Amino acid sequence: MAEGLSLRLEAARPIPLDLSLEAAPGELLALVGPSGAGKTTVLRCIAGLHRAAAGRIACGGEIWFDSASGRDIPPHRRRAGLVFQDYALFPHMTAAANVAAAMGHLPPARRTARLRELFALVHLSGLEHRRPAELSGGQQQRVAVARALARDPAVLLLDEPFSAVDRATRRKLQAELAALRRGLSIPILLVTHDLEEAVALADRIAVLHRGRGLQTDRPAALLAKPANAEVARLLDLRNLFRGRVEAQEAGRTLLRWGGRLLEAAPAPAFPPGAEVDWLVPGHAVLLHRRDRPSGGERENPVPAIVRNLLALGEEARVTLDVGDPDGGTLALSLPLHAARRNGLAPGEACTVSLLAEAIHLMPRSGG
Amino acid sequence: MDWTAFRLSVELGLWTLALLLPVSIWLGRVLAFRRFPGRGFLEAAVALPLVLPPTVLGFYLLSAFGAGAPLGAAWQALFGQGLAFSFSGLLLASVIANLPFAVQPIRNGFAAIPPPVREAAAVSGLPPWRVFARIELPLAWPGIATAAVLTFAHTLGEFGVVLMVGGAIPGETQTVAIAIYDRVQAFDDRSAAIMSAVLLGVSVVALGLANTLSRRVGRQRRDG
View 1 (cartoon, each protein chain N blue to C red):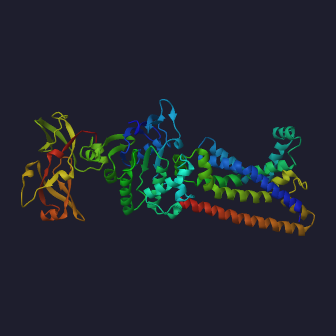
View 2: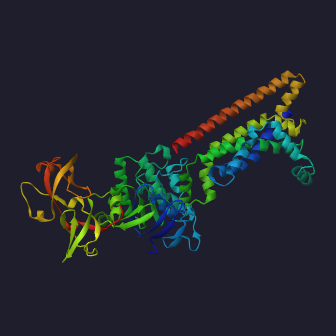
View 3: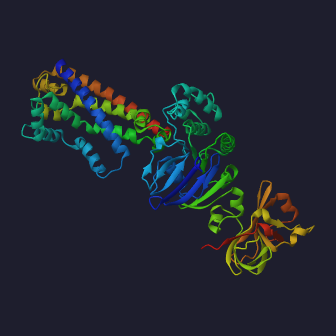
């Protein structure tokens, strides 16, 4: 990983940090977590704007920070492109001058051509001579991205780059970033508190909480198999319950959930009797059709009472009472017409199946 | 109209600016950006000439300028003449008396720059001196211009300190403000009226300029 980014940061104060991250060239790594998780601080450490008590940051084959040897390269000599949350454009300069300001490493003769290239890349051609105050939020963000790329960085750091624009602009900018990154062979770190955004854009997601790196994985793997209940809660995953491993049989794990026995995905790491947290994604909760029972319904059938039904456009979000001993509810989404056809309404009884393959067991954590 | 006194006042104003502005830009920037022990004390010290009666400030300066005091003795040894009742002494007094008028607007000018903008400059690869020249100075410029206008106008009108440390030696330390006082004492009301009108005009223009420039600082802050 000599050409990518690898870092290890530790600090107790003023902002606690305890994490290791790696990002390969061309990889987009999203940092997600609640406010105060230290996401922005990680970016600031990489750019050299914040100094962790201990650790090491290597990027593009250079060591930028190493507390063991006392090495700490100042920000202007680290090839890091940072897009600030509120863009931090130079208000007294035109868009072109903002971008050109980051081209100090290029011979003057090459700057004009590079400037044209960058403005085309971020779809801003023609607006070079506007000042930041004369640009829309989305246009300002594009100038900030162009400025960050102008110094030919070894890593691109994006700090909540879509938070200051309206929804429609955000979608557009996200699509632009997805297209832009295909041409970049440097690691990209995206800080966001929007999990959907991270899932849509990132190759891998690192979950941070109070400065600790809890888990780093591909989005699908993270959503289906969080390391523990804390990660699941930070990702706002639904259908998180507690149970006990009843038995390990040939190729399957039996799970005791209150008065029920469920078949779960094989999890041989947990011995019989182990207390666990477990999770079943909403898409693995199947509603039994009242008119026409089918074969899959023999899998972990659970009788339920509809507690709540929320119609969101074409989709219905249903909350079910399933007799969870901890009082938890089961959530699933289904097309509104399917909910109607099956007569789902608050207070109505129904039966669902929990697909065994999707039931994910995690070691019991506190709380 | 006492043109000698008027010229002396303008010279004093320009010299004060030349010496005070670099010092104030450095000091104002330090007060705006740095956190260090004794910062509050330094801020109070800079503001002191604002609240001190001019005669009190003049008295202490005069004492320091005397041949018996370290500053006065050192100056005498270096330049072969005393500081008290000389243009140099007057200039030094003017620089000190004008410190708050120059430092505070400049400090506000620097403080109005959003911290991420300075950080963005460093992350864009600009070394510290280029961040200062290309980002900080232009953005703090309205504050610096306001400081210059205020300092110049205030120097032209300063009376108490000038009288205390300079006396009223024509061509050496008699500024236009002192000349007005002398004319009135000599019952030459016509000269006093003309000179007063000129000073009034200069002050009004200076205040107008300072107001315009400080409004520009405010607008920039809202945009930023």
